[in-house]
Image (cartoon, rainbow, N blue to C red; front, side, top):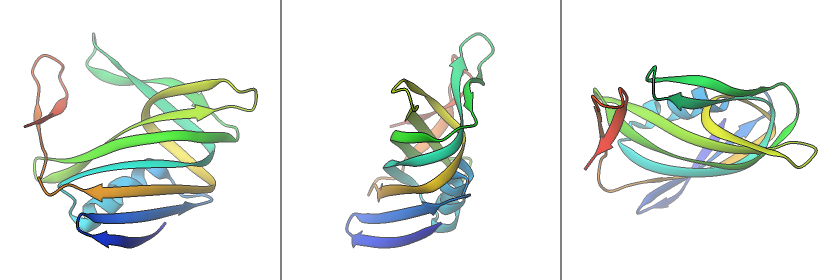
Length: 143
């Protein structure tokens, strides 16, 4: 993955993922390296495989909803980065399109890039904090 600063205020990056890169772990690594404490991002591209999740309210865990080992379009990726326990946490949702025009969406668990994914990431001047929500069992942004 390559990246470049496009703007200083607010700090805006372009991240270019290439064939074989893993999207979820790449976003997390970038957030850690840049010490991001409040950001939002969007992206488009294409994938050779994808694993999408959904949040099971009963078990309070993300479960696999869709797992595809085929070429798909990354129609939309949106998400945010906030701090939990001093570490940046990435939260991303994805919509992918299959060859037949059907779409699937969910929480990003894993995705392999082929041939590219173009991410625009913008830092917020306000740092975002996540705290554990006892009702849902997951860390949520608190303002």
